[in-house]
Length: 422
Image 1: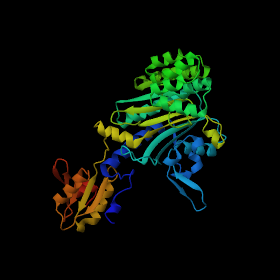
Image 2: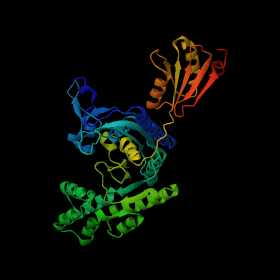
Image 3: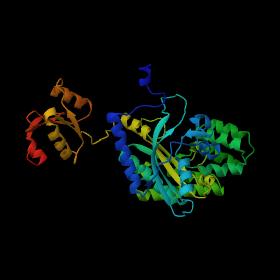
Image 4: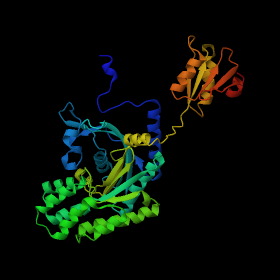
């Protein structure tokens, strides 16, 4: 029993030492980008009422949620997605605000997915949401902030694919498809199943231009030229408006100098039903899934009583770190730290020296045990990722400074380090 309790449930994992430090380092860098863009931090509960994430909200399927009950019989769920929580908060706390609201977050989500590919059931997401701004400038700011966040993390090879769900919505509305047919077609296009789309459309009596536009959707991905081509396939006002918005977005991103990170995919429609316009995903080598997703959700807040356009994205931090590890990208945690080792008779001096050193660096205060040698503490420092040892001997007059990485050793007067008569 004791041995079995050492293991975590399937889909969750422990992080410690260097790996945890790397995650904290990358998270801090991404968070700094959010704040430099003027976004304010917000925290939402790890669990909420089930209805916050139900089917009408367009979040994950019910069977992928971790559900439980409170003492009053209410159904609660561990949040599988943070965007609906932010929407709830925005409707509650910013109901009367009509100026742009910029919020950012760092939290864990919980998805009870099938045990495939070692997918995590608890993972960390960092993201940002802009409320009350319907402009293309807001779309561009979000994409630019995502790209800059991935850049500061240390990632160099990545691409952000951008789609526009209103192109699809305009065409299916023109075709008069019902909800079931729309969902089926959306899935086929999302899967790039060209033959499935062709088979489905062949059973429908549709104008040839409309049929060809829908049939082309799985293939409409690539550079800005694909967007220009899409505009020639239809005269549907809603679909064309989506195309013109993408063209405008590309020009703004070019002003940011970020166009090299951008590709387009009109066949990307997203798994969340709440997306209403631009949608985007970030990909990199070493990851079979997106490392970030985002999009516009102009109707979501109205379900909580506030009619406000919104756009946001989330970076899957664990997936990002896994990709960086596979690409052998070094993450400098800037943590070497120091052990201040002292003989038990020199405790007071050790505490005084620790107070001095901690003004500039991380210091671990450790009393030397009789049965342990200096070499034992050097070995401990090496396996703990600690770079140096300060050792105060029995006399308390000198400090031996040991560089754990090079085994270089120097002696200093303790009084010189403390800055007073030892």
